[in-house]
Length: 55
Image (cartoon, rainbow, N blue to C red; front, side, top):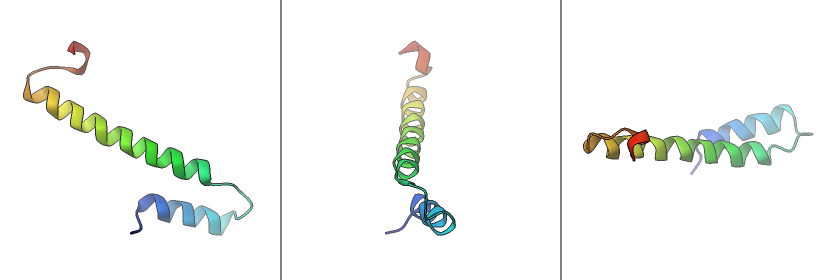
């Protein structure tokens, strides 16, 4: 299954096949995961009327 990161990396590989885009692929996925986890944490905290800095 292809996602947005796959499409981004494929575009870079087409435009600049001389570049190593593997770090871009890894960091893009880590960044997306971090945003997802941050949203989940904020939702969980708000259900208990907490701010992230209070925990």
